[in-house]
Image (spheres, rainbow, N blue to C red):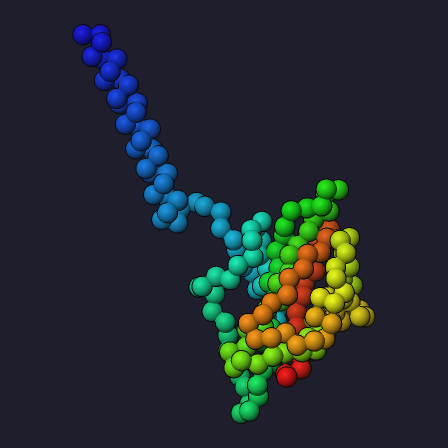
Length: 173
């Protein structure tokens, strides 16, 4: 008799664990309490990712088409900036990855991309041909050269806080 009750007890415990595992799996797939990257709109055409994740475009984020005057090839709205936290430096200084993307739907190349960037500075060296501060609140992307339609530029910077970056000027090529 005692042998059967031990087997029954083990079977009940095993079934309970399997049931709890299935519930946890279903909650994860159905949008329960899971940590997902959160996009926050910071300013003119700027998004910030608040989780430590690789920066990828989400299919459900709609891009707003700018109001174009007949014949305009591109606008500042065609440059999309995303940035988010990455692994800190060994000394503990936070780092951020920035992606600057030409999202022009008309196949346009954009040069002379300037960003509003405040007193941008970094404890990590950034290739000045990719991104550099010229003056207060004026940073130049890609050394002023065209950013081809669909291309992006990425770099990392290290500072105690995230700098808000937004497009201030572009030249349509």
